[in-house]
Amino acid sequence: MTKKKINIILILLVLGLWGTVGYRALYRQFSDSEVTNIIQDQKYNVSIKQINKDTFELEKINRDPFLNRNFQVIVVPKKNTSEYSPKKQLQLAAPQKKKAYIEWPQINYFGYIGSKEKGEDIILVMINSELCKLKLNTPLKGITIKKRYKDSIEVYFNSDKKMIKSQKL
Image (cartoon, rainbow, N blue to C red; front, side):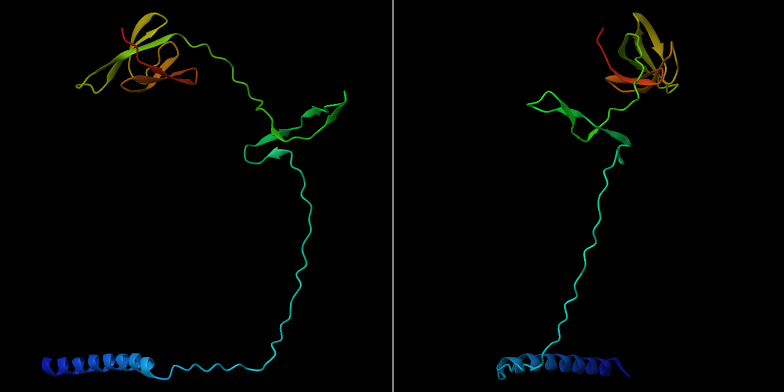
Protein backbone atom coordinates (compact mmCIF):
# COMPACT_ATOMS: atom_id res chain seq x y z
CA MET A 1 0.00 0.00 0.00
CA THR A 2 1.19 3.43 -0.71
CA LYS A 3 1.18 6.38 1.60
CA LYS A 4 -1.60 7.99 -0.35
CA LYS A 5 -3.97 5.02 0.15
CA ILE A 6 -3.12 4.81 3.87
CA ASN A 7 -3.82 8.55 4.30
CA ILE A 8 -7.18 8.23 2.52
CA ILE A 9 -8.19 5.26 4.71
CA LEU A 10 -7.18 7.12 7.89
CA ILE A 11 -9.06 10.27 6.83
CA LEU A 12 -12.21 8.22 6.14
CA LEU A 13 -11.84 6.46 9.50
CA VAL A 14 -11.49 9.77 11.39
CA LEU A 15 -14.46 11.27 9.50
CA GLY A 16 -16.53 8.20 10.35
CA LEU A 17 -15.68 8.46 14.07
CA TRP A 18 -16.45 12.19 14.20
CA GLY A 19 -19.63 11.65 12.24
CA THR A 20 -20.78 9.06 14.79
CA VAL A 21 -20.01 11.38 17.68
CA GLY A 22 -21.83 14.29 16.00
CA TYR A 23 -24.86 12.14 15.12
CA ARG A 24 -25.24 10.95 18.72
CA ALA A 25 -24.93 14.50 20.10
CA LEU A 26 -27.48 15.90 17.64
CA TYR A 27 -29.85 12.96 18.07
CA ARG A 28 -29.98 13.56 21.82
CA GLN A 29 -30.51 17.27 21.25
CA PHE A 30 -33.50 16.94 18.88
CA SER A 31 -35.07 13.69 19.98
CA ASP A 32 -38.00 13.39 22.35
CA SER A 33 -37.00 14.64 25.75
CA GLU A 34 -39.52 12.52 27.59
CA VAL A 35 -37.94 10.43 30.24
CA THR A 36 -39.87 7.41 31.26
CA ASN A 37 -39.55 6.45 34.83
CA ILE A 38 -40.35 2.85 35.45
CA ILE A 39 -40.98 2.11 39.05
CA GLN A 40 -40.99 -1.46 39.95
CA ASP A 41 -43.60 -2.46 42.43
CA GLN A 42 -41.35 -4.58 44.47
CA LYS A 43 -41.05 -4.48 48.17
CA TYR A 44 -37.51 -4.38 49.23
CA ASN A 45 -36.64 -6.65 52.07
CA VAL A 46 -34.50 -4.59 54.37
CA SER A 47 -33.15 -6.30 57.41
CA ILE A 48 -31.53 -4.24 60.12
CA LYS A 49 -28.77 -5.94 61.98
CA GLN A 50 -28.29 -4.81 65.52
CA ILE A 51 -24.74 -4.17 66.59
CA ASN A 52 -24.01 -4.99 70.19
CA LYS A 53 -21.57 -2.58 71.77
CA ASP A 54 -18.53 -3.94 73.48
CA THR A 55 -18.09 -2.66 77.01
CA PHE A 56 -14.79 -2.28 78.77
CA GLU A 57 -13.29 -0.31 81.61
CA LEU A 58 -10.17 1.81 81.39
CA GLU A 59 -7.61 1.34 84.09
CA LYS A 60 -5.66 4.26 85.49
CA ILE A 61 -2.02 4.24 84.58
CA ASN A 62 0.77 5.13 86.96
CA ARG A 63 3.37 6.29 84.48
CA ASP A 64 3.57 8.39 81.36
CA PRO A 65 4.52 6.04 78.49
CA PHE A 66 5.99 8.85 76.39
CA LEU A 67 8.19 10.58 78.94
CA ASN A 68 8.87 7.39 80.91
CA ARG A 69 8.10 9.10 84.22
CA ASN A 70 5.77 8.12 87.04
CA PHE A 71 2.74 10.23 87.87
CA GLN A 72 2.67 11.84 91.28
CA VAL A 73 -0.39 11.81 93.57
CA ILE A 74 -0.90 15.19 95.28
CA VAL A 75 -2.89 15.63 98.47
CA VAL A 76 -5.05 18.77 98.27
CA PRO A 77 -6.67 20.18 101.43
CA LYS A 78 -10.42 20.75 101.47
CA LYS A 79 -11.38 24.40 101.67
CA ASN A 80 -13.75 24.40 104.66
CA THR A 81 -12.30 21.59 106.74
CA SER A 82 -8.97 21.06 108.38
CA GLU A 83 -8.70 17.45 107.23
CA TYR A 84 -6.71 16.45 104.22
CA SER A 85 -8.28 14.15 101.75
CA PRO A 86 -6.26 12.58 98.99
CA LYS A 87 -7.45 14.00 95.72
CA LYS A 88 -5.81 12.35 92.83
CA GLN A 89 -4.36 14.74 90.34
CA LEU A 90 -2.12 13.43 87.66
CA GLN A 91 1.09 15.37 87.36
CA LEU A 92 4.43 14.34 86.13
CA ALA A 93 6.87 13.58 88.88
CA ALA A 94 10.11 15.49 88.71
CA PRO A 95 13.01 13.51 87.32
CA GLN A 96 15.06 11.86 90.04
CA LYS A 97 18.39 12.60 88.39
CA LYS A 98 20.15 15.64 89.78
CA LYS A 99 23.14 17.02 88.00
CA ALA A 100 26.22 17.58 90.04
CA TYR A 101 27.12 21.25 89.91
CA ILE A 102 30.33 21.77 88.02
CA GLU A 103 32.20 24.95 88.82
CA TRP A 104 33.49 26.33 85.57
CA PRO A 105 36.66 28.38 85.42
CA GLN A 106 36.29 31.94 84.17
CA ILE A 107 36.71 31.79 80.38
CA ASN A 108 36.88 34.77 78.02
CA TYR A 109 37.07 34.39 74.23
CA PHE A 110 38.98 37.06 72.31
CA GLY A 111 39.01 35.68 68.76
CA TYR A 112 41.11 33.45 66.56
CA ILE A 113 44.07 33.59 64.22
CA GLY A 114 43.65 31.62 61.01
CA SER A 115 46.59 29.88 59.33
CA LYS A 116 46.26 29.25 55.62
CA GLU A 117 49.42 27.14 55.39
CA LYS A 118 48.62 24.63 58.14
CA GLY A 119 44.85 24.89 57.88
CA GLU A 120 44.54 25.23 61.68
CA ASP A 121 43.12 28.06 63.73
CA ILE A 122 44.66 29.30 66.96
CA ILE A 123 42.01 30.47 69.39
CA LEU A 124 42.81 33.18 71.94
CA VAL A 125 41.19 32.39 75.28
CA MET A 126 41.70 33.74 78.78
CA ILE A 127 41.23 31.04 81.42
CA ASN A 128 41.20 32.35 85.01
CA SER A 129 43.06 35.55 83.98
CA GLU A 130 45.73 33.58 82.06
CA LEU A 131 45.93 34.17 78.29
CA CYS A 132 46.15 30.88 76.35
CA LYS A 133 46.42 29.92 72.69
CA LEU A 134 44.44 26.76 71.95
CA LYS A 135 43.75 24.65 68.88
CA LEU A 136 40.46 22.86 68.27
CA ASN A 137 40.02 19.57 70.18
CA THR A 138 43.20 20.13 72.21
CA PRO A 139 42.55 19.84 75.97
CA LEU A 140 44.10 22.33 78.41
CA LYS A 141 43.25 22.26 82.14
CA GLY A 142 40.25 20.05 81.39
CA ILE A 143 38.90 22.52 78.83
CA THR A 144 38.42 21.50 75.19
CA ILE A 145 37.22 23.76 72.41
CA LYS A 146 35.09 21.73 70.00
CA LYS A 147 33.79 24.35 67.53
CA ARG A 148 34.78 27.88 66.59
CA TYR A 149 32.49 30.54 65.21
CA LYS A 150 33.17 34.18 64.37
CA ASP A 151 31.56 35.49 67.54
CA SER A 152 31.61 32.48 69.89
CA ILE A 153 33.14 29.10 70.74
CA GLU A 154 31.72 25.81 72.00
CA VAL A 155 33.65 24.71 75.09
CA TYR A 156 33.53 21.36 76.93
CA PHE A 157 34.61 21.07 80.57
CA ASN A 158 34.21 17.72 82.36
CA SER A 159 31.57 16.52 79.83
CA ASP A 160 29.58 19.74 80.27
CA LYS A 161 29.07 22.11 77.33
CA LYS A 162 28.91 25.90 77.15
CA MET A 163 28.82 28.53 74.43
CA ILE A 164 31.07 31.50 75.15
CA LYS A 165 30.72 34.75 73.20
CA SER A 166 33.68 36.86 72.20
CA GLN A 167 34.76 39.87 74.19
CA LYS A 168 36.72 42.88 73.08
CA LEU A 169 40.13 43.61 74.58
